[in-house]
Length: 416
Image 1 (tube, helix red, strand yellow):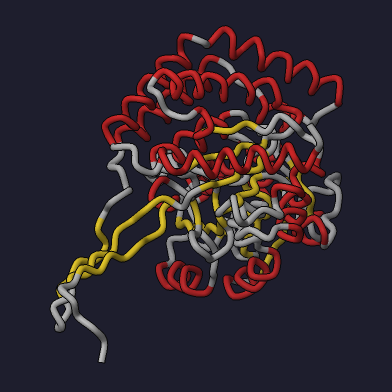
Image 2: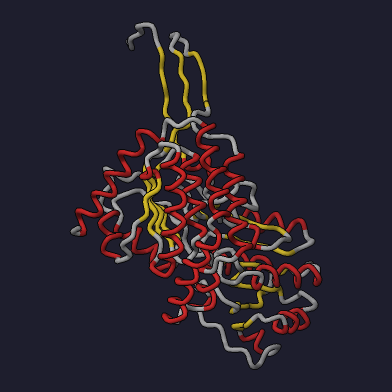
């Protein structure tokens, strides 16, 4: 099928499927998700086999360690998928929730309630768990999902979509509630982005290049899951033990994800900087240092200006010594991507200044940046972490996949 025909055909199918999906009751949606979780477990070996194809292709293509980690599915991660689906099933259905109900002075009865957005297209790279997370969230909130994963995860994404569609068909629900785009050529993606009459929202999840491409080419509203240049400031009053523990976790627990730490700023008056940096280096952190830090780590490469704007997604960490919290705030304001900022401090005045001076999706005090996650926030799985301000900021969960409609009931009233 010719490219434009293929794209329009899928988009039309998605739009048509919204008519039935948006009216499904909560009980049926939950039953589908519970059976989906069971089917994923039953299909575990098949999923792992398909994922192995992607991993082997990834090795041949020379994918980075961080990308290979994102691509990997194992028993633990499949178990995580299953638990995420079950958790989504357990949440209260947001569709139909009344946000305002009043009787106006003229006797009109007004009800504003939450309704599905419609057709959501998610464009993502590497992580096949996104396929199930997004499809489950979209389905539970009464939406249709068009899923366009990267070529590196093609086989994993395909099998997971087929499993979901199998359960939909079993319950007499259109399999087009979850649509898999099996064409990975970027030109096909561009064609989808020109169809606002069929697609209501686009969510890109991936590298800076993907985000920029989608933003610049889309005629459809975009919620960006942008790069995570996460920053952390060690105040002069910070606990050494806490600093070592939190920075290690923020940077090394899983370096290839968007909530991993990328920039570290340390007060020049923090008394144990040398000990801290040497310990972090021993644990595997690969520092890119400013002039002051080079005296402590003479063999470490110098950090360039561009490094502080970069989401490394590996063990590299840019570091700079600052005079005080005011300079730290200025540096973070300069380099931030609006994802996550953190402070380690025992000084309440400095903590409050940090909180009120910065404007990002999340600001953390005395804890790891790795907590910026829908699951950790109690939202279950997430569509992505939005670094923009409209219409959601931070983890995009179930309730954020709805909009509102207002119903007005009268008895013949007219406006005068």
